[in-house]
Length: 360
Image 1 (cartoon, rainbow, N blue to C red):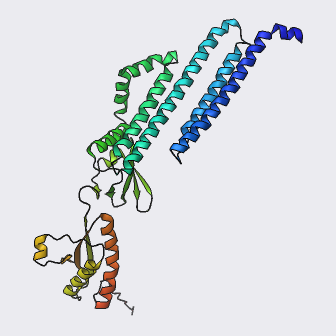
Image 2 (cartoon, one colour):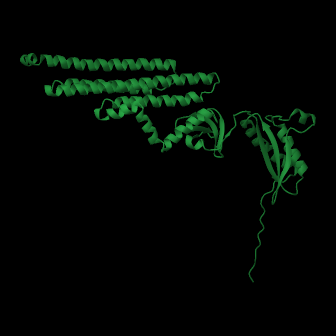
Image 3 (spheres, helix red, strand yellow):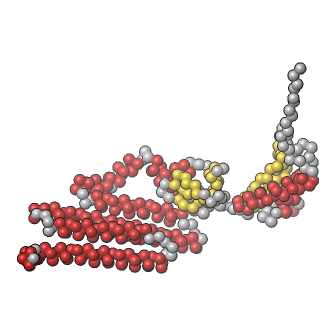
């Protein structure tokens, strides 16, 4: 045993140092992770630490792989030592690049989130910063992947070409025929020309009405009134004719239409609709000074159509916003129906006459 220890003394010392170094590095990594996670929670309460956990796993895996390569010097021939040294450098390079990429992406992401939160608190528009955050993160990860490719001789030329600029142009040309690029360009158009911003209430179709919650490189997210998230690709929403209820003046005109029977009194029906609309607390007086002087009513009513079995009467009402006008409409429809029942105004419904024939 003593002779064995004397013979392999240097190897045992070397292996012990490598193993101790791995253990120490993993302990330091875990402590660093706990400290960073605690500091992140202190500055950004409730924020998830996904990137920190990923960084911890990469570093711990890196130390183990480097340790295994270092221990391989003890069992392999000296002719393989040069290859092991190259492998050691490649693994160390890739690990450092991945760690720096995650650190850069996490730092940029947190900075953008902090700045976006400040803009929201100061009632500024955060749309551009939210979109720019996705662009910066994509660029950081793209550069990180290219730098990792530099470690492999067979892919080194591709990475250098891409970093030089020609590869980027070739990549863009390749994506030009893809829908992904159309979505990215659509997102850039939305950010540049601002047909809507985050927080705006928009209507794309009758089934897609809600507030914009996010604009990414690929899609726009809308939260409808059922609290459902609608994801629309930027290339599609960029082509649609949409209504932005929060662009310009917020006041909104709501047309309330009700059909009455031909036997009903038109004047009474118009008066009921006008009174119920003007009585609602959310009604907005949109009359000009001249209209007020002339004594015109706040709510205009008129017979607009003669149908097969009904007459359609419309009331033009105004609300301070789309939400107010919508609430006003559903409230007065109920109150008008109750007044119609009291005043004998009939809302027609289909009649059907059935003729029964008897066989002789």
